[in-house]
Length: 365
Image 1 (cartoon, rainbow, N blue to C red):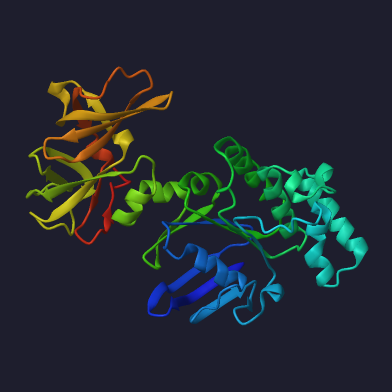
Image 2 (cartoon, one colour):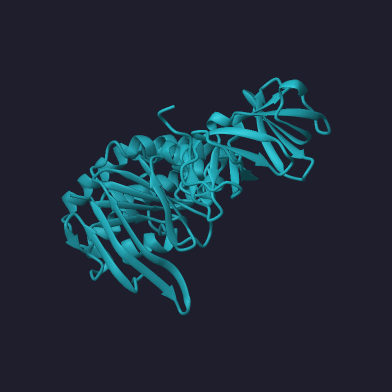
């Protein structure tokens, strides 16, 4: 049985539809990341699960019990807010105890739950401090601790790392990965940061334009994006989508011609593709490399060099104005303004039809 089940959940604000019949199942102890751009509906969906928003229709089930008509406090759900929502005049201990006292939990049990959560989060030394005396990372742990003491069946985290600096975000990401091994509940995290989603999630739910675009493991979504939006949104730098045309032929796999005339033989089965049909050739940076002119598929001018230590991303502009991103070695000598050859690995290329539907290399080849 799924820990959480959403069935045809939809929501509008006035005439604006923000969620369009969303259905999803989350397994027990699974960590799910809702990933999408601003306005995609991910935070609204989280708030509907928590009971902070009311859906216009659909059902929300948690461990076999329908909860969408229940008040937030009766759902068995705990939410960690983006801005922590700690009471500034209370100590850490008081913040963590507040909801339990209101629920009538006996003091000895409150003390035991706080002690256990503080141990898990390593904040025992902070219990008598107030939020203003703590760092952002410590306040984040307190907010998570306040959720843990409720012993929920489901944790909801709304942009949990967005207020932290880069170094602390990386450290807290590791701590969240460790935390999820210690709690006996499913977790759903909303984020716009794909690095967080790719690192932490068992599965990602990619949302855009009010709908779920794709659900899958991080690497499944990266390697086989369902459509052109997912292909561009997941992955950094983004996948290049180059306009192309399907070439006639009897080959098992599709050959395409780019706008500039270059031809690329892919490993995408041509079944169902129409000769002459417009498509987009999808290329991850690691599948485009610098090459001498005689071995290159294309010629381009370098417009940006992004050095990351162990590798270099080269942004290059083709004669037709299309920007393509290639990956080179960390010690690459390429510079802005250089003319370079680009070699395309057609075996790893994707094709996207005019409606955005993705087609991928045959895994059996």
